[in-house]
Length: 376
Image (cartoon, rainbow, N blue to C red; front, side, top):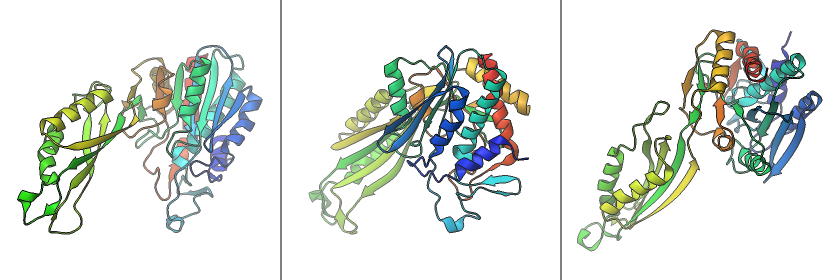
């Protein structure tokens, strides 16, 4: 017999919710949550659909967070089956969003259904924060809901984000934080001229090279218990006119910091400017902060989730802060304990995205067990 979690996952996959289009996913969640006593609020912003749902008014408030939007499929003819028609092969469920992250959302909803049926008078409150703008620019999604909740004075105590964090086996890794991301576009100015008359020109590539070498060698911090040292990486260098006999007038370097809580965005910016100024460069530098780092030290939420994983799977999970950014960076502003946990991430964003069916009900059970540990 098909499990309720699997059936709901398939139902959500069949809704082609390519970012930022929700395609009715959240309407389906409201239909399921409202009979459980959730007050459901749709929050629209910039073509993005967000859902805030809450059952109860007392503390502590445990929130399940996630996104209904998925990345584009890529070439459909390269998929073995229609990406929006869930299909089973070799014990796996295939479809866009199977791993990232419609299985997690389905598992969260069914876990809450089971928990409320068994514990109708549970302590505290349960919430859902769902967006259709996680895979896109993330400007009209979770951040908008968090701002609204902060304005109202609603306090979140715990939040589980259903990102696919596992590695090989369900529960072998959870994320208790993420690094910050900050990009820079550096334009070093020179004087364009004929390559045969270098004395009449000023080569910005040559001028920039010593400073770039120093930036590459710089040790930005040591990291800490939860984070690797901060990383600075160049991604693109653009210089020249395309002609082989012209010294360019400028060179543009794109770079990125992935930084830990051992550093701040402001401190890193100051150090970069100090190195560039030391080399006497004529330059412009534009900064873009994609997200600040966040960290949830070991505590009640990580202990409850780790214990639930151990009871369900026998695995002692690993706390990690690796990977890219997530909406956890917004939620961490209003919630002291944010942990990400979901299925294995090996196929996310790929052709033939999938999840092993054997993981689906255990994922739901882990979410339910965590509720039992924190709200009973």
